[in-house]
Length: 361
Image (cartoon, rainbow, N blue to C red):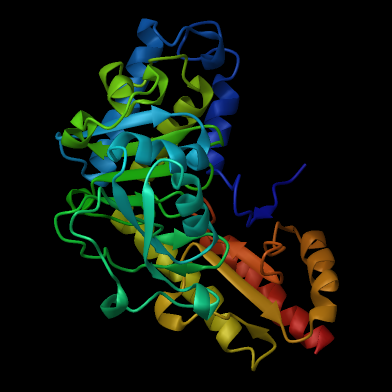
């Protein structure tokens, strides 16, 4: 059995070194005689794992002490609703910057709990570029401003952090978390589904400014309140211990790669290679996104003749290139270049693309 080059948008590739270590430790983790999934989350061994994972991600992302780090469940989609429950009082409004499918969904799911104001949107441009900053209509009295730094489906990315004044900035970083250094202090709350750059699905990493946990919003069950999870060290209920364990291994792997600055340089090189191949194909391949808004993590592209799509997918899979089919919302192809996708994988993809164009041109 051989491993393929995995370009899946999520659940996505995990570092091979992480998988191999998990394989070695599957039946006997840390000398316990049992797998990590079989041990109590309140036992000494797992509590030590949890503390180390938090320490490692704090080091990687330079997370200040006045921010809590939570390991939650539900996926980012659950938190589309849970965030307004925790950050907005009843009757309050929040600003949403919509730049693709996931921004749309975040706004829609928040609507039962907060007055959603679309402060900016690129819907009219079919989400091929970011909305011009001078057209944003931000409300200084909003409970928060929500945006999606990287849109997984449409392949657009903010390459800086937008300035929103004193209103807390909330970011769904599911598809670009830990892909480059960030200034955490620019944000009120960061959240990310784990299944792209952190670990397996079923885990959510959240970084939240502690003063926001003290907001009085509305009556709700304890399980929905972030302050309760923070007070319980993310163990208000039984957590996803397997996901937490793999996330911790991934954090260690990222440190071994040289940290987020080194990872960012590699991610830039991977994206540049693929975009150069697309742009240099003489129109055989095309990326529809405005170059200033292109994502480093998710690269959608089309062939000059859609009739070749099925052939491209069949031949690429036979060549060991997995999950290149584009999302049904926009069609075509998509290559996701998350942290665990190597430069060698992108080299294999671009070599196949050039060879395919030669044979089918």
